[in-house]
Image: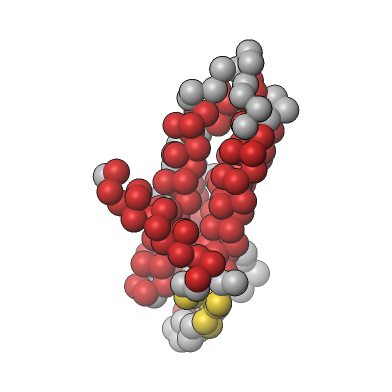
Length: 173
């Protein structure tokens, strides 16, 4: 189970005032709206076993930075979200960035696997492969959400696989 350690709130009153009434967390200065970028591709991947023609859309998905996501979004407070992200605590940002990189890498690995699928006659193992991938995606999104919502993630035995996956991703680049 992932353990969450809370962090101290950002003490600058200018943030508390400016973030009032927004969906930006006043403790972390991060917004969960960024997770929509990942939820979109996760939903597409989940559809693949029943609709293999969705693979094309999964392959079209590309990672997007926090800043790029908000710059291109219709999020009401997108400029403030970008400004607040730049001011988020360094240790929190490092954890957030590492988890996002891990999720991006796992999605990339899944895209690579899906490139080999015969859309006309997918292998029986496709459903299980997708289930395992989606389970990892959801776990990583939960961890990112935890960081966004005021906690930091500590590795536990259950998260060793995610740490190992990050090492694999780092080795690719």
